[in-house]
Length: 343
Image (cartoon, rainbow, N blue to C red):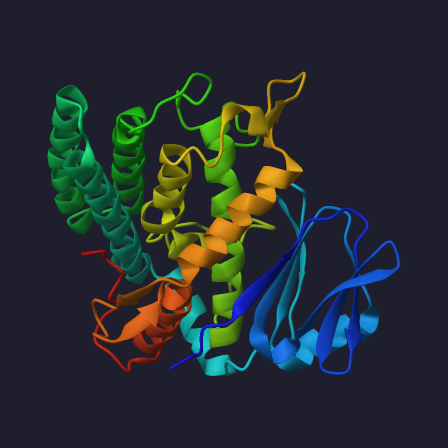
């Protein structure tokens, strides 16, 4: 079983990361502020104007520690990865399945049905915890609609119809996102899902955490030997990590959305923690961004029992386990790909 390791997030503009023995040192204004052994890390995420020494990048590549360079708000720029341990036969099989319409649809059904099922579980959890009768009723009614969409996803006969079901489910789910918040405050209302750029504060939080999830999924693909760019639900597009986006579908609601709701309900993140640009884009400020990352790291350390493997694991390892299960399915070691469905 893979050991749970931490991800180092660096958000301070102008920070310089360098190698010192078998450790990474974070230097700010020529002062060493942090030193961490590389063997305790599975990734480094640099948000903003962060520099890394060539020696550190080489050491991370050899140690299997991925380095991702993102904009301050989570947009992907580049990644540094070492040699993938996966053999060519696995990737050949991945490409073969991705080029076969029936195989592609079969695998994509799993991603979408699991996404809808996990969204439904979040709705039911929120309904159970709600003290407002009207909100509780709306959440329960929406959960019933999602059950119908799960069946539609499992029985979809084309990728287009599957994507249509996924889009309808997402719209239905987000239509009651405000009702899932137990402590609604002015300025923190959700209108509709928007991205590139996010147009309200909740969308800014969601997009930021989805970017962190995508980093984790990309690292999981590389560590497993899968090609992160070749997906099944998300088709090929230059610069898009299709398989990474496929894998995070199972975790958007379970990990990112639940964390956003928790931060809002506890009032850890409030309206004043965001900037609004002249174009209308809403961006998370630097200090609360660090608080969100700390909460994300803490949530990833929670322990659950994997529903298919029936073994205890941390939340942070789930996407790695799913990548391994997908690789096992592609190799023919198991009969089907078992998506992660939160019970």
